[in-house]
Length: 295
Image 1: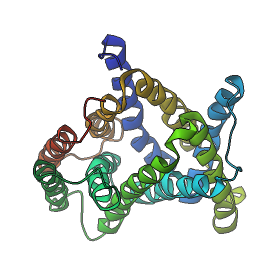
Image 2: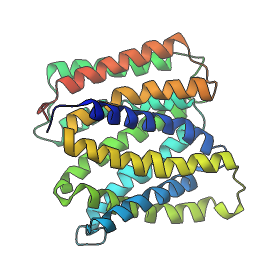
Image 3: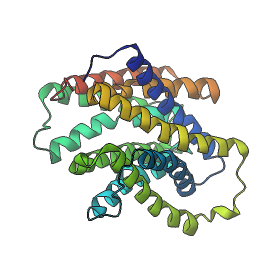
């Protein structure tokens, strides 16, 4: 893996910008779309560029091969469930708050890795980072201006969504040698298989009358924030390595706060800024003490 150049840093920033912008677009999409339908349409649009890439590069999609159980389980845990939970959570909390809470994924991921992986045990300094990071979340929950009895549940649902991303990441390690394009496309297809009946049975989307604004946000979520973002992520992974790519975790909540404040006029308090700072410090300590941090 090469040392990061200007183009690599720009691409990482672009990835953070795209993923950070996804939360205010989710918020706009929830104005017209219910959670199952929102997730289904998002995954549908995300699957298009993935299928085209596999076709263009002649990559075999193994979604329905003998390993179909792995692909389906990852699709459920890494896409279906977190997409639904994030949509539910973001519908009732500020979009930037969702971005901040989702940034805790490296913290919950470290705890799960400690439990389920032999070579990813939590060190002393890593535990300090986890404690600091989650103390920032607790401090955030003390802000009664943005979190109260009316939306506590939805903030917890959002955190649960981030935890499922970690679970999905651990499951993906079981088939990591199957190729990034194939794994991503196969799990996306399985996620779509789960989401279509959920949307049709429980929400009956044909009866809805979505606004143009919500629809455009949903298309953006699928094509840009999921499909294109995956392509950028894959390029960064192959050129610069996993550790460099994970630095995007610092950028997502910052961009999320920016978009929420300037585009949705969401209220930001001093507790939010302090909490964000504390969480980022915690993530930094955890990442700095990960094993194999060279790449």
